[in-house]
Amino acid sequence: MSKKLWGGRFEKETDDLVEKFTASIEFDKKLYEQDITGSMAHARMLARAGIIPKEEAAQIIKGLLEIKLEIERGEFPFTCELEDIHMHVESRLFEKIGPVAGMLHTARSRNDQVALDLHLYVKEKIAEVVDKIEELMKVLWKLAAENRDAVMPGYTHLQRAQPVTLSRYFKAYYYMLRRDKERFSAAMKGADIMPLGACALAGTTLPIDRQYTRELLGFSRIYENTIDAVSDRDFVIEFISCSAMLMVHLSRMVEEFILWSTSEFDFIELDDAFATGSSIMPQKKNPDVLELIRGKAGRVFGNLMSVLTVMKGLPLAYNRDMQEDKEPLFDTADTVTACLSVLPGLLSTMKIKKENMKKAVEDSFADATYYAEYLVKKGMPFRTAHEVVGKMVSYCIKKNKKLRDLSLPEFKNFSELFEEDALNLSRYPEEVKNKKAL
Image (cartoon, rainbow, N blue to C red; front, side, top):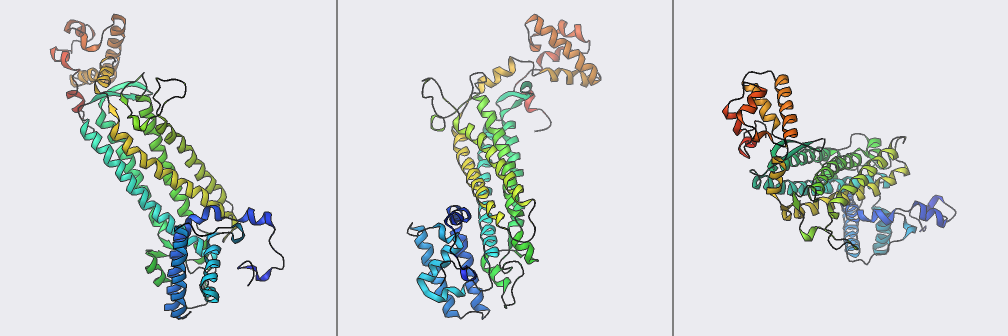
């Protein structure tokens, strides 16, 4: 048998540099479980269709299970000479059961084999990410429920804008994550298609049973076109795209908490278990976990651009360029799951300084809109009310007062529509909780 399982047509050994350059085993060995699962299903199908004897299929499946255990125990040797996970498994199968191993690749190519592995991997990762998103959503909802009466400044342009409850902030991120969950769930449709049976690109004349393989592997559909089956990486791009959108939301969330943990805001304090110190400044308590999540967002964005660029100019069907889809995919999956794993504990343990948040509201003019809306309720056009209250704010700044400090005569200097009930407009949290949209 040739050193390479595909080497029958070649008369020379592969150059060492070429072997190292083309090998993908250092990263695609991550797919060993999916590869072996797919191979066992393929062997069962071949036997059921009468393409290979059932006894040989049983030998193949037994050998594959033994190989899986070897890999899991760390006893399996990986080498660049065998290029990828597919060649490693098949070569080891030859060592274990002899020429019978050669039957496994009947009616199959590495093109549809690697596509299958990736589909199985992405399906698993989508399910894992959705579970972790749900866990984080539960933490945010719990925090929202616990902080319905905690008043804080809402911000626009990073300037204090209007009073809101902390609950509303937590719910904002909850709903962002809910959209992320919906996006990943929609992406599952693209991943849940079985490519096996497409072979290199044109299918096979052998009487395979793709529906049976689909059932064994738990796919809902089969690719309708064999060329599309081996050249499609939309599902990879969709997974990374959904991940990039998720990381936008996580990055925005952690940026909020980074700001809030500064002495300038002093709204929260991170638990010691989720913060780090400085090597030179003893007083420091740094939000490194949050900063790393913010930084890792850029990493996922880069992975998305990388795969889009790889795929953008490829003619049909399979091209070796597509080997470059795996490292960005694997890195994205690892990065996103790591970020989602650390956040629930960090959020659950951080200390919320409600009094500081309330003081930030009271030290500002965040209640100004209340007074404009008060005048609107009295019949004044909003633009006029806006101007009136703007002048009141300017007056207060000069007099070193807040709107709630004004007397009724001072109110009436700006508009006769103000009555005694205007003296109680700045109520917290009652007025905040009375807002119509939550």
